[in-house]
Length: 390
Image 1 (tube, rainbow, N blue to C red):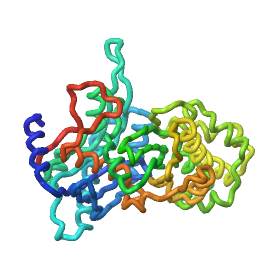
Image 2: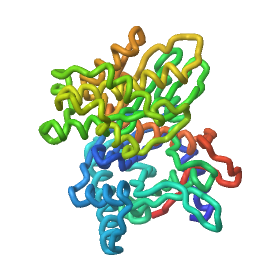
Image 3: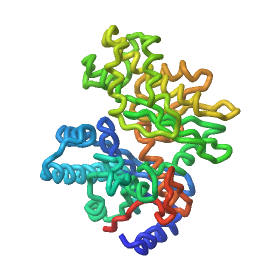
Image 4: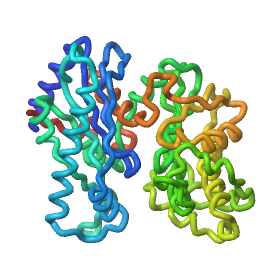
């Protein structure tokens, strides 16, 4: 879209005192496609409705093969995946919109976070540069919904000189507005990611992946033949006993002990479930040890990286891992006396903190707030993404 058209769209929305947006976000394979219908007024937000669509089996298989194994695919398969994901975007958006009272009205715009099949460095003329490959068509979505759609956030960050990250600041700061002091926010998806906010100073102290989230837990749960392949509430884990010696060995993994900031893809932790120290353990004790590893890697990261003089007021947890009560108990034991709390207390859907903070960030940008890139270095590229008009 020409810059002048994009600027005109943003200018039009900026004049509104209240705005409404539908946020569609493709998470990990377990997260599926999440959608939220949100209202924004003066820095506050309201969640009108949410919707969730799991990936159909064939979509999940194709995404897995492309994102993890990098096996070549027939162009017809890629075309089918692009089409199917686009239809899932539209279905999830319509589900979220239909769940809201009709009196609220239609959204002013949509925010789309597309699934990434590949992201990394590519060599050309002996030089390395980052790039990414996604699926899903924002132009189709814009025409189907009849509203502008903002997308391509990771690509825009790469063009700005970054490594390809979602813009979640100042959204994270807005989420923390009803907390006090320094808050630790940990989203436990397939990978765990910590955001540290000083609400009194209105500042983001740091943000980084910390280590495995549920990716290894799910793998061990499948080996233990849990129903559905997931120990979602941690009931089976709670019957096991983590091996302290093995836990210490696994926690010294070079990536886990690496200094922040850092980014992880789930597959980089897959070797840990085959470590020799786990072999003598039964399936349930192995599951308990791996679950404890997620909690320990979060705590060890906090102890290494947080340099503040005051103790954080709370550890706020979100993501699918927050449903695992055994994992929550491990976190509580590690972080005591810092209380472990649920982001639902802050009006944040437990499994949808990332799409919410993305939506808040976009609306803050539309409202005129500066949105810095995490690692962008190209001043000619302005945030946040690419608009598609209906």
